[in-house]
Image 1 (cartoon, rainbow, N blue to C red):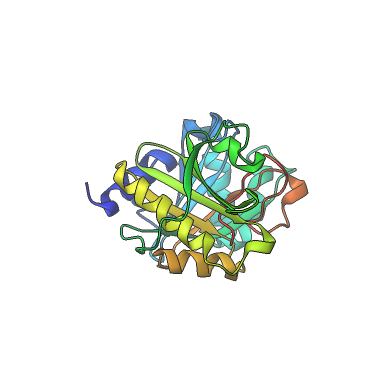
Image 2: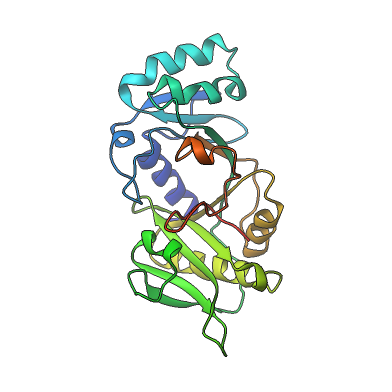
Length: 247
């Protein structure tokens, strides 16, 4: 299966429908009421191309969200911040991210070592990913310099997240880890995806360098909780809360 075909399968399973048939299809998906990759609920998820998008919500909330979207002049920028309250999570915020994927990651040196996520020496933020995670350590001190995890949403789509320690930034560690993880995802039969906040220029640079082009796609949905609603996607919020890709 080609990477673009894997992506289509992933989005159809993850969102409940793909490809979109209008500017924004509001669809009901029972999976919105079930725990996701991290054991938490993700009640609203959406992905859009420049031509159209899909907004996946719990089935019982399709009508009120669709009606609100129509009343707002089919403008998701207006409706989006209203969605949390419409689906019963008024304490949460609304995020929009750049959505990227690749079938041809950049060929870069494999600098990371795969380690089981439940290894007691793995940083706390990487542990929720499960399976294997990538880590880079200082050769002399053993200090963790960078790490990457894989959000295994389904059999077809795996989202990557990466974090570099402040003192180790600027060395190309993040791009190397993302490219290395992307190759493993492809080898396992899925497609690697990557998300970052629109204003996270460092994360955008990492994505480009690793082979994840910006095709004008976006992702959107509910933040984890109101306390982090104003923090850009891509920033680790607290120990054990692994967010989307960061440089």
